[in-house]
Image: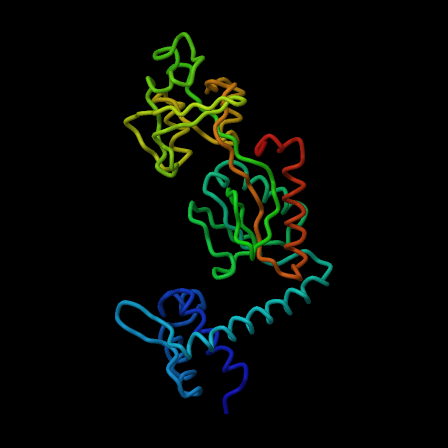
Length: 308
């Protein structure tokens, strides 16, 4: 006789297949074999007496019945998650797993320090960190938090502002001595220098700078394009050219003089940074503790310059 828990496992298998887009990836997420996932979906279709999925060699698509059924499955999963979070929220010990996604450069700059400081207070909390330039689906991929640079956010998510990312245009003293010994006092002079470009920027060939009410857009050129800030910083330190980099990545280099900020009176556009998480009514204690810690950590004068 089939139990309710067995039917829920079958429904969860179907939901995971749809979210992952394949039986193979669903099996990986669930930690079971592809054959078992396929068997669960087939058993569910047999029990309901309807086809839920259209299967081809290239793609998987829901039938009309499948879409209707899956809406209820998602609600059931979310209600179960709410129940687990409600129970977890009344616990007094901060422990368990938190999954966090953030831009790669945050991991290169400060994220490890932030997590180490948090775990010094709460050593029972474990982290699974995803560093990527891709914006993950927090709910669909099971993330608790994201650090994001964006002006707008999914309205179904909660976003706690942390500050802004400011970019600096920098170069090594050696490069400036060779190519701009008199320094720079006008943005248009940037066009004559070798610029390290990042194709992640929509304006990688046109840099817009502002000073008060004045705004100047300058075309820049260069023979080296790198889609990773750490590589750009390394190239700038080697004197390959000028680079626009987040201030949090060059604080130490500017302080030591290994890099020099160009046109410090002119500003590049800023990007707001927020801690983003699903809008649940009951957050586990570990999630509430982490949320509050992150906000306080960036307010601390020791770290405030990272996002100011």
